[in-house]
Image (cartoon, rainbow, N blue to C red; front, side, top):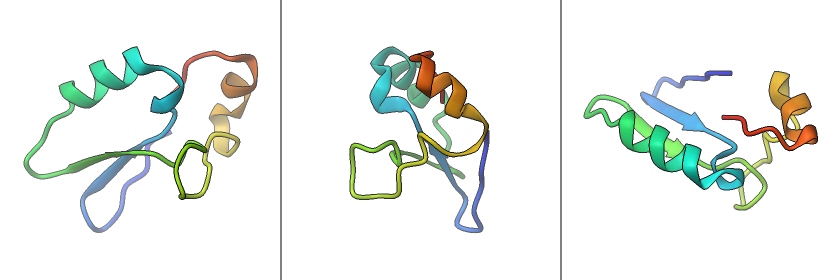
Length: 66
């Protein structure tokens, strides 16, 4: 699932559940035009997207997802 905003931000959720994915994906996606953000995964004060959308099946089974 990929979402975008008019603010040129890209949110990657699920990163707090798998540190290896976070480290590899966030560092490889560096851009000076798009702000890469993480969160919305139940470990911050933002809405939890971990049980939303089409990746909920992966999350429930403990399968890494972003």
